Amino acid sequence: MHPKPLRVRLGFLSAKFIKGHWSLAKTSTKGTVAYYCGIGAESLVARHYQALGYVICDVRWRTRGCEIDLILRHDDTFVFVEVKAAKTWDAAKLRYSLAQQHLQIEAASQYLGKDE
Image (cartoon, rainbow, N blue to C red; front, side):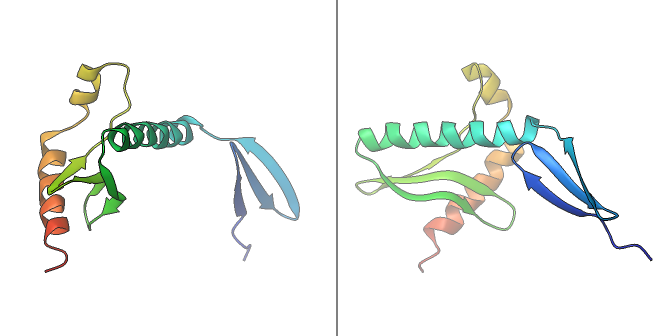
């Protein structure tokens, strides 16, 4: 019986230890780039709201089936934000499905009732 290969992520390279030797192979960067693009977009949106006087309550708040990117508060108003990085507003809207909207409404309701 052979042990399973050991895999280690090194930036955009994948290293495998197979039969006593390390081998490097390029992996897809699309997911990694999308992740960091999303992080950057969320940071930009958060700074925009902070400049307008909003307080950041939570970032990437999760429930069992949903994540809310930013939860903000201004006076007695909570704002729940889904950030979509896209070239145009229309492209971003198309990626925000009705099903996702319903999940986030449920998650927002859970967030507001979490201290009860």
